[in-house]
Image (cartoon, rainbow, N blue to C red; front, side, top):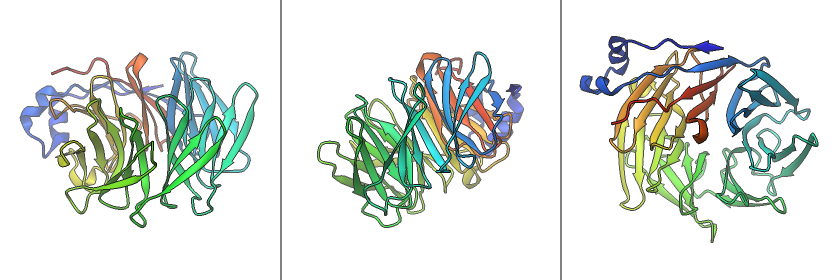
Length: 338
């Protein structure tokens, strides 16, 4: 296990660069733990199913993985059809769901029976299911289809799939989250837009962001239904407020080199985002109430890239996988409060 030493205040100030020097007083670097995954193939998108079980996928290694933090033990379930698994989520019933990104299906894995069921897309154009999210009642799985340009909904009871075409061509629907009212929000990486799907009508509406060069990649939604996103191209944290149709943004430390990618939202309303365009990657905490950066930490392994993250509320920790071949855990409970 790797642990990163805490950075001194002068180093943090240097990292911030374009930010106000006064903001450094609010920064509180974290001690991030990382474990080397014993299997090659880009471990990514960890999902914590309970306090001592973390599932993830090996995207180029074509496997499902499980990690037990208390023992440090790993488990691997090979996927013989080599589907390029991209994302994984786990239901409260213990069933593991993954996207077969290269084979056009969503996979259902029952760990107790060691059984895989493949639910193929009803339209061949939807060939690359990407990222998933459960509805609050776990009756549905919502998902994006990146290059196919769809948003999808899988009904868990009968394994049926409905597809909604994104209006803008080549919009690259990417990150996906559900608002408190059940509306599904999607980051459209190929354009300067977000999209929202009404769960009752399945109508999709697009929302144009202020800057034409914006490219939102991942997003999170606070309890007040404000949409927070990582602008991958412009190196900013962005806010879109549907209630007022307003847009606001804040620069990250490395500016346009930041390439913010993986995001997570904790129970304190803090947005965590990783700057992946710099080495080592920088794990950043942004308080959505005070609207300021409150934490900056280098990732010990360097990371290469952190593509998606999962916040586990019972342990107040953010989990992530890295292109450097590690699983990481950042306990965020002790971050300074304003």
